[in-house]
Every structure is written in C-alpha cells, then in structure tokens.
Image (tube, rainbow over all chains, first blue to last red; front, side, top):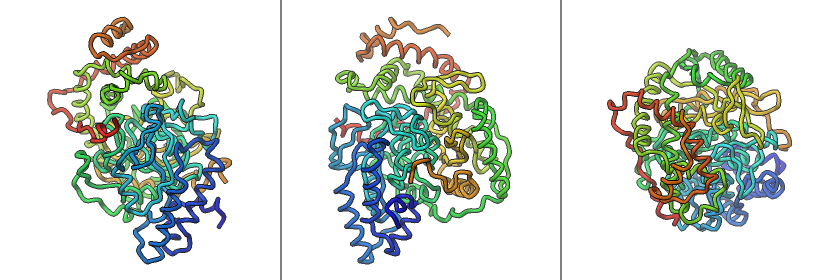
Amino acid sequence: MSADALTRLTIAEAAEMLRRRALSPVELTRACLARIRREDGDRRAFITVLDEQALAAAAAAEQEIAAGRYRGPLHGVPIALKDLVMTRGVRTTCGSRILKDWIPEADATVAVRLAEAGAILLGKLNMHEFAYGPTGVNPHYGTPRNPWDGTRMPGGSSSGSGVAVAAGLVPGALGTDTGGSVRIPAALCGIVGLKPTYGRVSRAGVIPLAWSLDHVGPMTRTVADAALLLQVLAGRDPADPSTADGPVPDYGRALPGEVRGLRLGLLTEYFFAHLEAEVRKAVLAAARSLQALGASVEEVALPGIHHAGPASFAIIASEATAYHEPYLKSRAAEYGADVRARLTTGQFVLATQYLKAQRARQLLRAEVDAALGRVDALLFPTTPIPAPRLEAREATVEGLTEDVRWWLIRCTRPINVTGHPALSVPCGLTTDGLPIGLQIVGRYFDEATLFRIGHALETTSPLRGRRPPGVA
Amino acid sequence: MTAIPIQLLQAISQGLSQIPATPEDLAVAAAQLTAQAAGLARLDELDLLTVEPATMLLPPREASRVR
C-alpha cells in the first residue's frame, strides 16, 4: 500500500491492520508526517508537528503490539489535538501570540486518555485564536485552507482539525465546541464532528472559552471513527467536576445499526427559516434517505429556541472576558483585532443579563427534552450556508443579510446552550463542490443513537468515498 | 433599538471594569451590544422565575495553571 493510501485509511481500517500486524504504527506515522511535510506549508492545519516524539511513540507501540500487548483500536493510530489542549512539554498556543511560547507542565485529561489508549500524538492543530470565532481565520499562524476550495473558510474555531482530517494529514483529531466549533468546521470541510453531551468528556486541561458551554469532541472521516474516539474520551474525571458519573456505553454496538423504527424530528421554523437552497435540498434529501431506510420523519417545533442566540451571546461574552481579563489589561495589543474587539464587548454585558441567560437555559433544555420525548433524534442543517469565501464579511440568504459569523453559528449554538449531544455528518455537495452538513441531536448521553443514524446516512451519502479535489 | 453611545462604554471601561479599550474596539462593542439588545430584552418573555439558575458554572482548573 502506498504512503498516500495509508493516509486515506480511516481509524477503524488502520486499527484492523495494526491489530493483525499487517501495518506498522511507524509506517503509518511516517506516511502522515510525510504528507504533512509535503502539503501543510500551504494547508496550515498544524501549528506544531511532533516528528521525533511521534515516531518514538509509534516505535514503542509497534513493540508493544508485537509483544502481544495490544491496547485497543487506537493503539498505534496517529491523532492530533487542537492547540488549546494542554500537552506536557509541548507548546500550547491557543492559536495566539500571547501563548506562543507556553509549554504546559501537565497534560489535559483527554490527552492522557488518548495516550493511554496507545494513540500517537502527531501534533497540535491551528485554530481560531483562543477558540473565539467560527470562521477559522487566524492572523498569527495563517488561516487553514479548506481542502474543498482554498478560497473558502475552513470554519472554526477547530479549523486546523477540520482541514487536517479532510486533507488526509491525520485520520482523527480533537476539537472543542462552545458555539459550534467542532460541528462548523466538520460541515464546511466535509467530515464528521461530534459535540458530546455536556459532561460526557472532561475539559480539564483544555483552555476554556466559556466554561459553562465548552465541550471537547472528536473530528473524523467516518461516524465509526468518532465512536472509537468517544469510547476512549468519555467518562467521569475528578479533575472536571462537570463530568457525569454514569457508565459509558459500548458505542461500537450501535454500529452498524438499524434506523428502522426510529422516530426522527425535522426541526422546521428557526432552523429552516433562512437556508441556502442547496443546503435545504441536501438536508431534506438526507431525511428522505433515512425514511427510505425505515425511520419515520415528522416535523417538530421548538418555539422558544430563538432565545438561545442571545443567551449564548451573554454567556460566552461574559465568561470569555472574565477569563481573559488579565491579558486584556496587560497584553491587549497582542490579540488579533476580531478577538480583542469581542473580548472588549464582554465587559459591558450586565450581570443580570448573564444570569437571565443561565436561567433561560433550563427552559430551553426542557423544551428540547420535551421534543425528544416524542422522537428519538432531531434533524436540521449544521450551517445554513456552505463555506463562505475567505474575504466575506456578510452573506445574504433569502433576502436576509447578516454577518458571516452570525450565519455560521446560527444552527449550532442553541445546542451548546442546552447541552444535548449533536453530531454533524456530511450530507451533500453544492454545485460549486462545497460540503453540506446535517446535524443530528439526541437525548442526553445518547450519543449511540446519533452514531446509528449518522452511520446509516453515510451508507447513502452522496459524499461516500469522495475526497476533496487535489487530495491524493 | 437605540444605539449604545461609545462614550458610555468608554466611561464604563475606564471607571468601572478598568479594562483598557481602543476607540475602534469600543465601536465594535457598541455595534454588537446594540445588535444583541433586543434579543436579550426578550429573555424576559420567558418565565424565568420558575427555574433555578443553571448550575453548569464550574471553572476548570487549568485557568490557574496557564499563568
């Protein structure tokens, strides 16, 4: 198998070969590193590449597997982390100038769990500065190029994660999601992204944007790979008191799963109110595909969900500015202009607005819970528009002109406010060849049902087997 | 919705929050706050007194480690 072919393997495919010793972790890691060296000068997905460390870890994994100490499906598999996940001895920049030389003394819990599972840390990924923006544009480390069209935004804030996975630089990555930052780049780059239930995955050692809305989640090329990563990441962590105590299910049992008999709710009104025509067509076609596979689809309304946007604004602005205040007072000039302006805004949000927003969350959670009492999962677009051009500031959809950032987070941020799990899966391509994402939202801690639905959709997806142009 | 004056934000920034801000950033802040004001006011349409504040507010520990 050629080196490029190795980089196209999914995690599940690579794992099977590694387990049978038909593939060496060193060979796989070398193939990914070679591709990064060859292509990432233009793609700008990585901030730090860990050549020597990765090869040493791969060699150790190879010896362990050869000695019969196979740890599981991530053993020997290269993975990369968004550069706000703390890594001991490896700089963690948060995509900023402010932390450009910061080397943590400890690992984040998610980094520890991946290492314990035998994953090979390939490097740290580019991102919107301090995760505070959905476009992925970064003035300090360059903007990662969307593999489907380099003149388009990759989406953010986990932009490097989306680009690296879509371009074949690494089979899987971690992102974080406060208003859509896993799901937006997943949708714009044509890959799978999961925002797990709030409390499912530890955030200890992950630099916060807004800690009551932050989630860590996997970004992969397939739903099965997202399930493999979640299996390792999920579970109680004493270092993050928000993590849940409950048992972690065997997500592999959900795959391949039947969707026959599942009841799905198509969220109309807010989520379909303003959509680009090709997005609407692709999402409705995906719903029909699931119907053809035996699921029933009905329209569901969430009449209060329009309150989620203002609530999200008040919470993110307040928490982010509270976290960044020391830097704003001492090193404000080192922020990029867009992030500094947004952090400046946060000091003017009233405490009463913040607390009302937190209380509103309870009502919005109850509304989504009630809808999920009638159906097993909810369907709607991940983003109302495909990847905008890099220079775009506004977009007009069905007569409504708004800031591009507003469009990108419109359909994702409500689910950070409620904390339900949300999976973005590719469901189509525009006539310009840009990916479209479908969002599937489920009950608390029921990621397994999302995997079933997402996996079923993959089997009928127009993107099945498609790679971005120029990705060999 | 009435636009929020930049001078007001300047006074709050200097006298209350004590976070320095440039006129350009204050102009962006004024625009953002004005754009969000109506939506934030509409939170009052919800029956907020029937619920406890959300309790998902715990700051993660790395906040102290980074500095």
